[in-house]
Image (tube, rainbow, N blue to C red; front, side, top):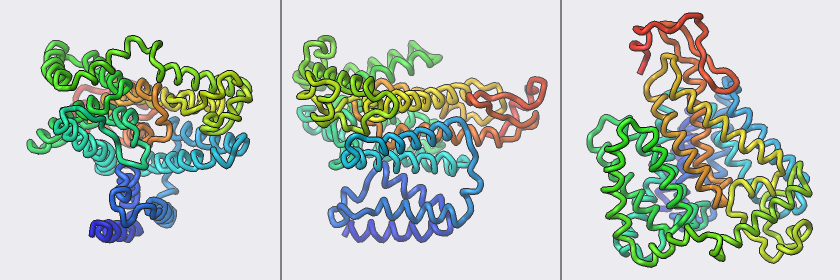
Amino acid sequence: MKDLFLLAFVSGCLVVSLRYPFAGVITWAWFTIMTPHQMAYGTFGVPLNLLIAGVTLFAVVYSREAQRFQADPITVLMLVFLLWQTVAQHLSLLPEVSGEYYSRLSKTLIFTLLCAQMVTDKLRFHAITWILAGGIGFFAVKGALFTLVTLGQYRVQGLENTVLEDNNHFGIAVATMIPLLAFMRQQTRSVMIRHGLALTIGLSVIAVLGTHSRGALVALVVFGLVLWWKSRHKLSLLALGLVLLVPAISFMPDKWLDRMQTIGSASEDASFRGRLDAWEINWRLAVDHPVTGVGLRNAYDKEIAALSAPDKAEAAKAAHSIYFEILGGSGFIGLALFLSLFAAAFLTARSIEFSRAPIPDWHRQFAHYAQISLLIFAVGGASTSMEMWDGYLLIIALIAALTRQAQANEAPGGKTAINRLGRFRQRTRGAVPQNARQTAPQ
C-alpha cells in the first residue's frame, strides 16, 4: 500500500513541477535526503530519483528559469570542481570502477548547483532547509528511540543502501544537522513546533551517542565548543550542556565508555592504523599522479595501490577521509578546489553574519549556524568517506543562495552587493543611517 501511495504522491509532484519547477526541486531534495523509495520495498531499485531529476531539469529549462541563473564565487567553484572531476574521470586508471562514484558525485553537484540558483526567496530557502534538517532529524529521532529502548547496547545505523548506512557516517550527518535544527527553531513562531524541535535536538544528541562512533562524538564535542565560543551566554550554555550530556553519557553501557576512551590512544588502535595506511596510499598515488589523481576511489583496488605503495597494497581500502578520498581520486588540483569551496562557503557565511549592511536577521542567523555545521562536517569528515553526501553540499548551496538574496535586497539606505570573496559592501558612499538598519525587511 505504501508503495502505491509513494508512486501516486511522486506522480502528483511531477505534474505540479511542470508548472512550478521548484516543486520538482523540493521533491528531488526529499528523495536525496530521505530516500523514501528505499523504505518502500515495492519500489526498491526503481530509479524514481532519476525520473524526478529529469522532469525537474526539463521543467526548469522549459519555464526559462535557467535564464535567470547568476554566477557567484561559490557556484563557480562548485561548477569548476564538477568539471575537474569530469577530467579526472576521463583520465582515470580504472574508469569502469571510478565511473560509478563519478556519476554519483556529479549528480549530487548538479542538484546542489540547481538549488543554489533556484532558492531565490525566504519561502524556498526555508522549504529546502526544513527538508534537509527535518529529514535527517527524522532518522535521528528513530535512532535515539532505538538507543533508549535497547539501553544503548546496539549501534544505531543509517538507512540501508544509502550513503548514511554506516554508523560513523550517520552520526556525523546528525551532528552536522543539529545547528540547522536550532536555526529552524528560531524561525518558527509556533510554540509546539519550537518545543518539538528542541526535543529533536536533544534526541539527536542521544542518536549520535547511540552510533558508538568515535568520530561522531568528536564532531559533537566540536559542535559544543564552537557553540559555546560564539555564544554570549557562555556560563548558562556550559551549565545546560553539563545537565544534558552527563546523564546521557551515564546512560550508555560500559562497552560504549570503553570504546570512547580509545580516542586518547588512537595510535594503538588497529582500525586507526589501517586508516593511516589508507591515507598513505592515497598520498603516494597523488604524488605520482599530482594533476588528476587515479580516479575516484580507485585507491581501494590493491593493484592500483601497488603502483605507488607496494608495501601498503594489502591495506588498500576506504580512505575514511573526505580529504584523502578527493586527493587520491582527483589529485592536488581536485583537493585544492574542494578546500577552496569549503573556504569560500565559510568565509561568505561569516561575512553575512557580521555584515553591516541592512539585511534580514534570518540571513545572519542562518549564516551563524551554517558556519558551525561546516566546521562539524570538516572535522567529522576527516575520518569518514562522505565526500559524496548531499547534506553538506546543500548547506554550501544555501549559503550561495543567501548571497544573491542579499544582493537583490533593497534597503532605504541603498542596495547591497557582494564581492568575489563573498564580503558585503555598500554601493552608497556613506555609512547606512541607523534608521535604515532598523527598517530593513525582516
